[in-house]
Length: 256
Ligand code: ARG
Image (cartoon, rainbow, N blue to C red; front, side, top):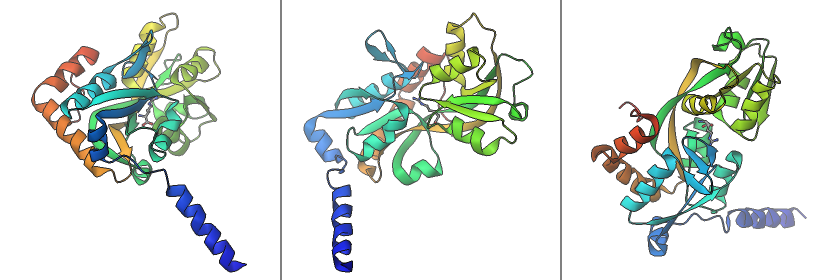
């Protein structure tokens, strides 16, 4: 009986890893197309203008593919399903504003960071602008993000944390007073607030800063290296600066 369960466990382990093989850089080069994934509801980083996916990370990833001598293909899916999809070999690389965290580093291999940014407190009440103002308040944030995790773990005395599948829904919670504050990324907040001028929002302080990178399947270092090589080139030849200026009117690369 014991032996059977040992065998069964071994079979389960094999099945769990089978089919979950990330494509090697060689295989991708042979195929000629890099399969990219993003959320697509995260302006100005990656979002839809009509049917067209566009944004800073879209321009950047397409430039990287070009520099790597590859064509590309995009898939969009909810934010919290992106990294799991790498494990299932549904795409080769995820670029969706993921902050590099120790927990994520156990599950995926990150590329060099392509920008640095911060989490910000957004509220209608001007008295709510920093971490200390969140005590006793209801806070909204997007599911699966470092913003949600930060508020849950590092802000003392929060009354309730409500999470939503998209940032838009998290912002709506604030607009409809189901939340007192919304925690999100500062450039995304700026863009969303400009589009919703009806409500007077205040962009508060940065709660923390993070290094944002693309991710490949855990251990697929050759692919990360090829991307990093193309990325280093873009920092040197001015093409990164150009894309960053286009979307932010400033250079958002991480300080060295
Ligand atoms: N930077 C945050 C994180 O790493 C939020 C990323 C959200 N990205 C998105 N495409 N919705 O969790």
